[in-house]
Length: 337
Image 1 (cartoon, rainbow, N blue to C red):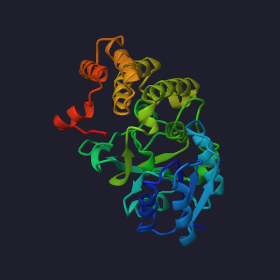
Image 2: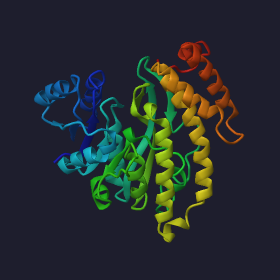
Image 3: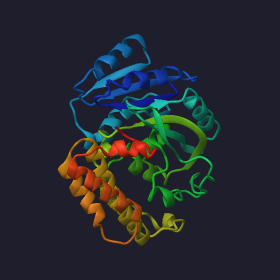
């Protein structure tokens, strides 16, 4: 039986899957299995996965009819039901691991049986240029005292506002996942990491490794860039409901309130409209870009002045069908095009 089971959901990742698989095969810790969960890809993703499965017995390929992002938890739980390892890792088909990722997390989980979630830093990689946009969590700042989740549930103080845990770095005890009923995804929420981690936060200790363990890719066509407004709205709703249902024994360790949550996401929503305008402009959806930029410009409240300026500039660029990314590059900023 393998130590680690790696769940790799993938959809139309023919340009990335080869590198993803190689980052697993080249791990210094070799006791693993990789379950590739193909959500009905229409490109050569399946062929690439099958070629690897034919030559590497630790790789299994599972194809399903396309279910889409709204059924991501169902896809993950299909993989979980197939998993034989005692630790579960997440590696989407367009992401990468550093060579010692599994070894470092094996040492943590084996030597600290109280830890149910191990995680670390990851680099956000702009896929077209291989430029490192940022490191999450940022280096050079103190670790948040809530990260170890001691007492149980205290990590929700940060998780509710900003999910600082890159999913690509996760290693989770399978027994803990099974106790909460597998991966979670409320209706309308286009991801599983926050809902799953929020429930795991009520089960045991987390362990943060300050090293960079992985890379995830950023490009304008991915789900988080296509639906930034919807993601903020659904996250806002999820966090409110999760807090309201929280047992009083956990609430005593929280320093944030519903009012804090509303204030935070109110600000985030304005930024999401401006970001959505940018990604639509990159995809040449000029009319829709102007709509999102307009929502950002006239969003209620006096804050986020810099983002309003960005939105005004973006609105002008969308009106004349100009390339805002060219301006971004001239200013020395990260471009997604």
